[in-house]
Amino acid sequence: MTTSIASQLELLQQEIAKSREKRANFEDNVRLIAVSKRQPIDKVEEAYQNGHREFGENFVQEGVEKIQKLGKSDIEWHMLGAIQSRKCKDIAAHFDWVQSVDRIKIINKLNQAREGMAPLNVCIQVNLFGEAQKAGVNEQVCFELAEAIQNSPNLTLRGIMALPPKQTEYPKQLQQFEKVTELYQQLAEQYPDIDTLSMGMSGDFEAAIAAGSTMIRIGTAIFGQRDA
Image 1 (cartoon, rainbow, N blue to C red):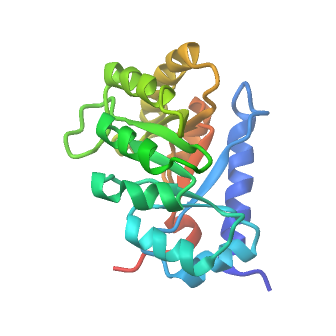
Image 2 (image 1 turned 120 degrees about the vertical axis):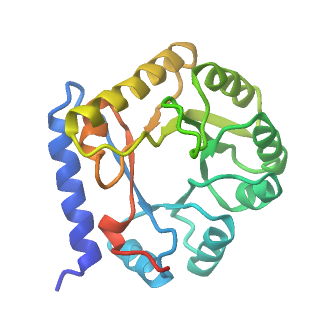
């Protein structure tokens, strides 16, 4: 019997395929990050047993515990949450991606801590809608951080990550995501090797993909409600 998590993963891949078909360059792959924050490790294991290999965590300690307990070398782990400078060493030692970089200080500490390992994949978190309660940088600072990452030998600039304001109407979602895509395209002109536009969650990933997202981040739609 197909498990619930397996069913949800399969359903999401079907929805991703439908959304890709609505886009001019629908041949491009859209990667699905299973956001496992505050989810029990057995659910992560179940997703893994059903073929999923990319997971995202928002809290460093929780993420490191799961990484160590699962012990799966073929999983790619993404750090998605706010980063404290004192946590950079743990992030660099255990994660494959960091999507929430928004300060020069963090770039320098991650680069230093990653020495002797394969380069750490980095996305810059942008905040283009002036939301004071959210992390992220504006367009100008985005380019400054990109240059700093590019000049860090132990980091690889992959692109940008965004979490726009919550909208329930598709046209408003699309409008916001297209603004982020415009910045991504400008960044790609200067850094043609970037390949990641991480935007879109459970309630808006269809619009995100239509606007050009290459990576969506889905949690409860895969695993169910989170632990308190």
